[in-house]
Image (cartoon, rainbow, N blue to C red; front, side, top):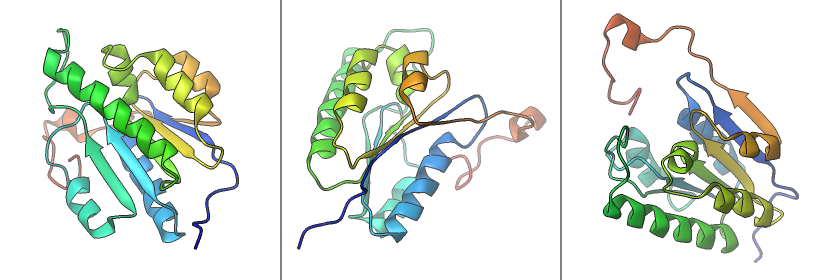
Length: 178
């Protein structure tokens, strides 16, 4: 029996300074899984335990999340050799997943950060967008998305921070922010 795919996959981007980029991508995943589609998410910065990793166990094999980061901030410093190796491995795995015929949606979570930190080359991302199989819907998330990706995308949503609990001194909460 042959798996049915989308007729045409598009490119979606969730960017901006507001909360909810990864959450929007996961919401799209939930809708897709409900319609028989399969999703592969690569997280290029995250490497810590998150609520979505626990939930994915209930949705596997229809949603796979793979983390290719250590979960450490890479702000004000160059990525170390381990972080670079993980990103390279993740990129190779993502391309294999994209061309496997198994998945309908490929999510590149926090890809803008991975590009800005030089974990993944922008040209590689643009090439993957261009060379993805026709049926693949690709979702890219992260703040400060490179202009070249925004121009290539079919849908761009910018999350705007209007008000956030951090401003009131409320720290991240399990099940809400992670």
